[in-house]
Picture 1 (cartoon, rainbow, N blue to C red):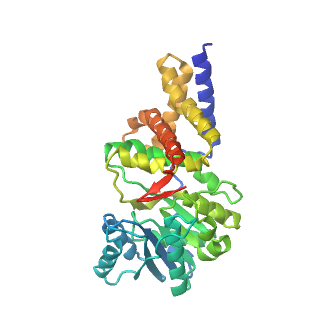
Picture 2 (cartoon, rainbow, N blue to C red; picture 1 turned 90 degrees about the horizontal axis):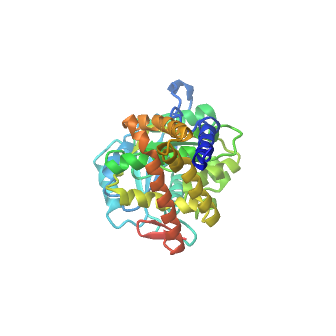
Picture 3 (cartoon, one colour; picture 1 turned 60 degrees about the horizontal axis):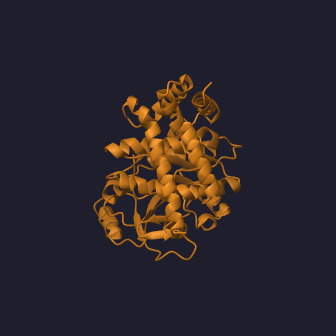
Length: 378
């Protein structure tokens, strides 16, 4: 056999293992289980903490959905203005005044982050402190400023946490997919995340795999205190996964799935913004290791680039590997309502992600690291 066929066979073997041995990562049916409200005999007090930095443009599409939550128990929203320069705090207050009778809103500002803290976690620290001082809070809903929620979102999260004895319930919010580049990059972003952290594996009680999606995290307050959150994770750039690991180390049970009741309203105007979204944290995911970077690039080439190249060279193994790859991507495209033939573009998208990862390393070594709205973290 030719070298091309041998390499294609190696890629096919990897894809067969991914198909069957990586926690069925490609399935999209891991959702919050439905259940009657009667299962909850007591609706606990919940504090909704929203860190926000320069989010005035998206708040009108997201914050009203939190204020309008149909929650049977007591709940309050704490929006933490993280040094915004666009009037985020005042926009939030105006939205609350325009919705009398909704959940109460408190707007706070902690000032600049202390050394060693990322801005988001510093804001969460302030919001959690406000919530615990104001109420006997049993749960914290940590949600990003660009995430909108269905009216029963909070109720469904609490019902699942109480009914299943969970300490952390997280949903990967449905990201916006409207523009051409969003269609190319966003479903693949969630697909790759699930490949790294298969939801079924995360959700096993004895699993050592821990992950969460930072846009929507319901966290038991007692567990947060036991795990030292957020102080114990104060410098984390990939804060959601780090929080999940801290909860797991503290003996807490975690659950992660795709969202039906939460979605992002943040638009991405073009490739440059999507590129920044990935490049901001890709090298941190690799622990800033050149060795892991080299292995990742080689792995991406073997898994995603080899099948179509080998197929075009006439290798049956290349065609088989490309077929398995395409089949595993179809459920995610269906979840996002995209044409199924779009699965054929996954190799090209993977090449883009490889370049984004290399650029992430370049930025880190030039001292620009994880940059977000005017801040750069080492």
